[in-house]
Image (tube, rainbow, N blue to C red):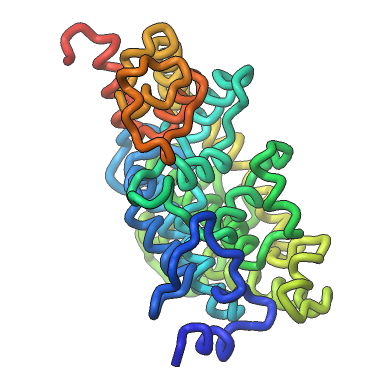
Length: 393
């Protein structure tokens, strides 16, 4: 049986099918047994930007311990939960997984502090937004194939970067927005992203003693999970109790998301893919009860975790590193690695040796921003030491 026959037998009528994809910018021959979205997924896993997620901050900058999340472990949690729900709703699991795998590729080092730093530095030079940088990364900056620049991903996976973007007025967004609303697979990965980080940020905050149980018990959604675990188990130690509550909260949100999405599909009479595109409201959502509880939780995280002095101090350090690196590279462009310097419109002729069809010429500020945004936390610190500390190479 061919893969497209298997899709037709299994997928819901409103799910995205590989054979219905708008294809790739650079045409490629179909693979004999892998769908276009399977190939997307595998290209993401093997790309440089994906590997670098291992060294990029989620919330806690620097090495607090070996257990707190990084961008990579967060991404893998989003993948696992998204794929489970996609299977239950009979959506395209391969597309959902590819979107989840790629959704954080554009994040710079040092978490949201790093994005704030680059957005401020690039305010007069075209701006910076991590989703659009993710699209730029997979379209141009990844270099794995001799035939074309970037990863040559499917139109639908590239669309997901734009649909996830908060500022959709930029020119690169417009072709994707003309298709209508986001696919269900895109909506699912986006919604699960918030489910995962809300829950695991509590886990990490408790596990690293940023907050304690007395504080989190003021949050209704935590109290609900705690009551269920307390009714099921007795005499759990502090760590096992925390883990059990986190599992319960994830399971509850997953079940709620599935149930509410099925209700909304019925309410809006979604029968085919075009109905998804035309729907004026998101279809993949939590119930009003859970959505309200999540808003309270996110307020707690913002006030008590993300603004915790330890987190703020680490964030300020990361922001300062990027700011000083940016200014130094502007002052002395020759400090940039050759493969980045050759993309600068003002670069000397001697460095422009890259294949013409893969060379994009940019302003110096954009080239520097691309270089910094691609760094891991560790590499940014190392580059800072090389430039500003006398005892390093």
